[in-house]
Image (cartoon, rainbow, N blue to C red):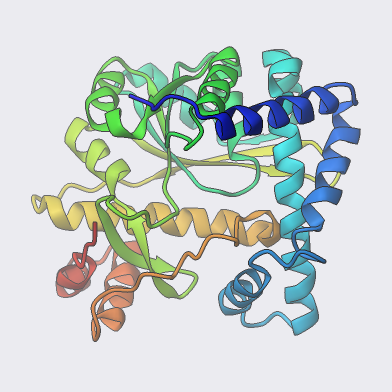
Length: 332
């Protein structure tokens, strides 16, 4: 149960509503451009986590020049600001408006086939492109969509965001209720969307390769998929040059070898690799502001984690066996 709102919470909430009201007076493209301009201030002059962003981009893309790293970092801040403005306007444009934004769609037959199969869908996405629009698009296409979301610290803001998401057709599952409600949703044939690219304290996780380094990654989607025999899809909604979006959906192979723990680790490695592929198509559209590699596996196990991840992607049974102990270096 959320706490009661304080005076500070109310002031923050009123400020938020004032900003949203101002954005709602603008056409979509103007609001997005304004958001981008404001987001760019985070890079310069405010320099909010600028060093973190640039160092992570440089490590993930070692072939980039220093200038390219700075350009990508700057654009990532502009992208973040643009996202915030767009999300505020989603309820205004409604389901038809959301569908119209996606002028390119790849892999949608995978969604239709999974829905027809009736076992539900575990949808994995991350903080890339406009993740909020991704969930809205599935709901706008008539897919029964549940999204697992972390509660906001401000209870008024939390209620506002939840109501906004539900107005566009999604059902929100607080992360504290994810285990119980996700099982029920999947059994009912619904799609359950999960952001799976941040190592959060207290969350069951597995270290898997991500841009050439071990990264603490949530294992919940893999556990649900294997437990309930549900298909796993990875999706992203990436912004195109003209301001519209491309939805990309791909299926992730789910193997059952009889070793549930190893199968979970393998699946986590596979959907993380898929997210990396999506990010590589547009690096500036990823949320580099998060310290993705802050937590690392126990000393001396990083090489084994990387080897096990490579084996998982290659589908090699013997190699996967050799590295399974390392990928089980879980943290909570």
